[in-house]
Length: 218
Image (cartoon, rainbow, N blue to C red; front, top):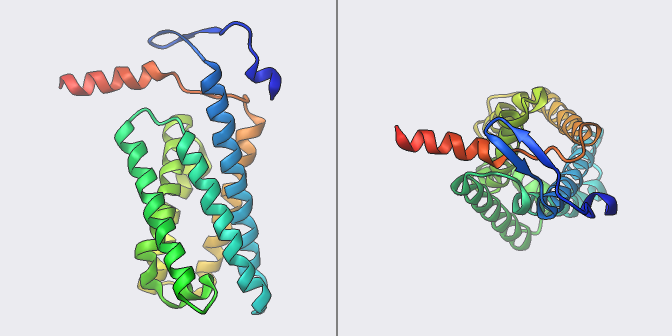
């Protein structure tokens, strides 16, 4: 990681709209983004595994609260450093995360029950907590749009569908558990892809600026 950050001279790449370089700041922000996404994915996978574990162990149910807290903090770190060149979209995802996190904190403080039980037994709380997952869906959409990742093309519609189905109550428990397992699995697939591909897959800013300029002229 140190060698990646210590590039003596910036390498000039030939992009679709001209030459561009990747700065030390770009590299550092991507490292932070991926680190946050890694922690979020592992936290979500662990939490999902505990939820799907047979039986109702009170210790496991209570453990879901700090695990979810770790997931939220890591997601916030990724949202602070993600490369989204439409500033309004970037800010919108951050606002979603803030709303979801504040709602989560309020529910955790004001209830005597573990957070998981509060949300599970009161589906209406998804209207607040769900904003966190709306922000996560934004990351999935960005990965699908920018890198054409197959798993994120499934995750982008899967997440809102699963949350809304729980809130509306039109899916059986077995189906919801199956979809949760698929969600956790695909999230880990995304995580692995991020590390086994080129280490710093940074998008060329000029591509987005060119598209934005063309749209403004229409």
